[in-house]
Image 1 (spheres, helix red, strand yellow):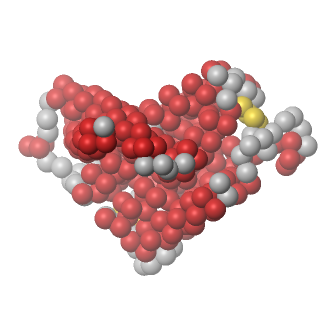
Image 2 (tube, rainbow, N blue to C red; image 1 turned 90 degrees about the vertical axis):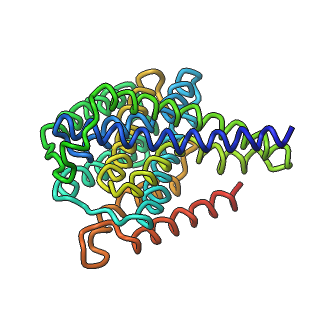
Amino acid sequence: MIWLQVLLLIGGLALIVFGADWLVDGASGIARRFGLSEFVIGLTIVGMGTSAPEMVVSFIGAFQGNADIAIGNVVGSNIMNTLLILGVTALILPMAITPSNWKRDIPMNILITVLLIALGLEYTIFHIGTNGLSRWDGGILIALFIGYMILSFKGNKPDEEDSPAKQRSVWMCLLLIVAGIAGLAFGGKLFVNNATELAQALGVSDKFIAITILAGGTSMPELATCVVAAAKKKGQLALGNIIGSNVFNILLILGGSALISPLSFDHITYVDLGVLLVSALVLLTAGFVGRKKEIDRLDGVLFVLIWAAYMAYLIYNL
């Protein structure tokens, strides 16, 4: 029944929007209560929460010995996070890049991307081992994740834009965070499942569904959260969410997946890895486009255009 699938699709979207709103409000409240910057909260609680779909998909793929799912899911998600989601967010609200973003967070995002490529293509580049992530590689990625989280909290500088009068209780903030993550998770699943069934009913091919609906589905929480954060003028939370999701995806999700089962890079193309590296580097160059050190609307247009070109390449090569 197509009408029922349409209703469930709309219901899924509504859950995603409300979930994102609750998550942003709860995370901002926690930041104010404990003197944490919204960037750090976006990097940790929000970044991890919105990356839950990628974690589930990649861990299941690793348990089943399907490296293509585990690696492809993370590579595709990180590309979409930076180029599409951050691009769209910048079109809504230009995001200032703080000194700590310049010195620590953006370079770390580039470093772990380069490290992933180096470890994944170690035979091609260094003529040692194999092209893939071993359990030792997984251990290295997990150790780096722990170190980066410690460094992020040590370098925390609280925001000063919110007054104490706006503070909610800790329990209310935690309830909003849990409800927000649950809304994003269930809403995303409802949206993806019914969008897939609706597309199949309309005769759309499975490959096209995989590249569009399923690939976008796991990044839906990040998109909704960043758009809501931008609408609420919380650019640092949005930027933290994207960088946090990217770091979480590579270091913890791929690191954990490699510990479960070694992952082969045999079916990941140089184009995929090249676009992944470009998506990390554009964050570094963004502050030099225009006069201000921020990811502005011009950067947003550039990000979205690069993503669109990559999608066109994938669809052309189906």
